[in-house]
Image (cartoon, rainbow, N blue to C red):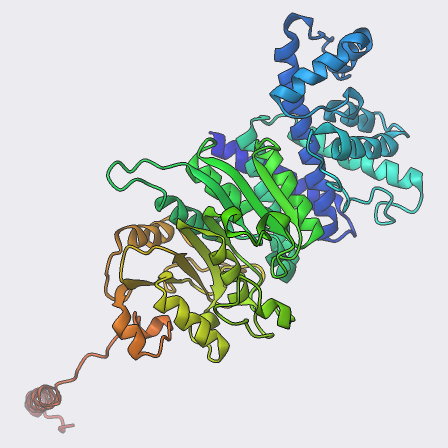
Length: 534
């Protein structure tokens, strides 16, 4: 029932977005739509907690009174507001003023209030700077409420916002405010906007089916061998986190108390804000995650840029879907960087190994990293071959998984998942060739639940299966000059059935003799009837 509710809410919201965005492109409208959904979540969560906190003192309003009940309490209890907000910061970690709550904003929209735009602007600024103990500066920076795309004049923009908010309020009124329902609807919308954004979607969204594979792999390795119980992951990192869906998927696998803290880094400012909203909307407290805006390749994050090995930040699990074959400008200084010094710099044409080495450096000894990369990293020569060879000789590459083509919105090329560890249990490398296990779609191909389960089960058990998976000893990989091209080790080609030429010849003679006998019998019948033979 909950899944149906989630899916229906997602579809309802997408339908509203599709009808209301008009001439505005999908990426621009996405920011408005998701921000309003985020405000609705924060508001509902806050009002629900306030109701529990105030108990019988929580104002009761008439059925036709659409005002936020909390505004009545604030007005009647001004001297008690500071202590109340102090309590709310302890319990839900943030505060929202009654006039900025979704119930107040949506009522202003219903009444077509000419002050809606100004109130909304003030509300967004309050949330960014004052709602939380830790600052969320710039959280709504990409939402321009004064954009000409909303209208040429203040009145036109205000009217447009009233319409958008009113339709969203009406559309979601019947649905549950449960965190899982709203959070999954948010993910659904991100996916739908990604589908409409084409190649740009690769900047912020990893399809859920692929996200599930990566998260299940790193979670599997957190389990105790004998009991199967999951050990708590102290720190989890995604250094190219996009909208944060990969990190949230790991949390979903581990349970809400299974991770100490989530860390993410994102270069794109719009996507960075999207990730922060996504974390909060999925019920994480601001103390349970840290998302940083900065360039991963330049290591623009103070907590990861500590040169003292004794204070090095390490992560129990790392998941990542960095931009494929990104062009970058490696400098001489980067050549001496602690992440790359022992391996060499990835070429200008493709930063794939630079991203990989960044993650590997910060991986804990017993940790697991699962990263999505283009197939080129498996066989390209030059400096990439030298990096790949060292990783293999150092026993860092545990598993290579080949996925079907056309799974991503951003590219149709087939990609692979590399699983890396600093302390491998096995001396071989597991190859999984899942390229032929998928469901064909109109725009993108899809991995079915059975396809995902097959990959994860094969990884868990290190199964060997003809034309699907193989455990390859390092000696064999060395003989292949450390080339990891999957088809070298797990071929899906079928051998043609051998033809027995003598048997075929004998069969043809038999057929010819039978045809000759049949013709003779046929002519005998014709002769009896006084007809000429054929």
